[in-house]
Image 1 (tube, rainbow, N blue to C red):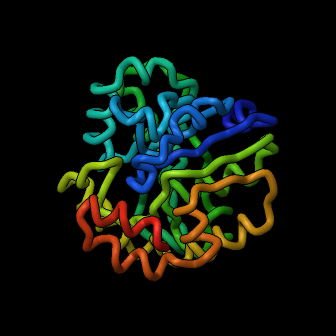
Image 2: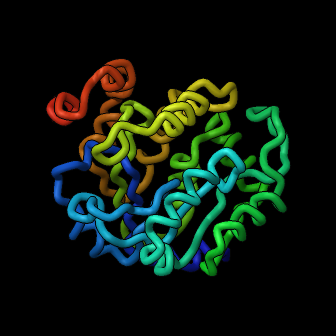
Length: 252
């Protein structure tokens, strides 16, 4: 049993992303009541606790060279929260070529070195190539980290799972702010990558969550995954300012 399984087994787990549709919902206290709060490519910044919760127990980061400037900034700005994180997880392949990702990714040594460069003492777990390739084969593409995490959690005997804060790149906002130029360029690379296929990930997640019990979602996730409103959202939400986005999120 790996470190992630040991922590999550038989626990009430909340998996929280940074999507702005959570703004004003007041989920913070509900999220903090879970045994474990998991976050993807994010450490909860100060000022958003009412909607997103205040805890970060397990954080998934890809630890690739391109991502490190953003992660260094997050660690520097949230040192108190970082100190309380029980486990950092690197869910990406090491130096490995797959049918869905033809370029070499970060080497295992480089991933570990980038973690050490953050100058933190938290526990660390790097998911292996075999598990990554298995997930890629199930999905049919090189998945984004959020989908990798959801796939991993589906294999763990948790007591309860709550998923919120995932927009699947249907908005230019992060929390209640427009993403920085760096973040938007990073999103464009993800959406335009020959290995990534968000539409394929949606199909996989629809199949995955129809088969599992003890899962709760927010309305946005439910509309995208279970009601298949992703085609509408991905084309429309990128055109909106934040106030219009908040109004529209209630309709679909």
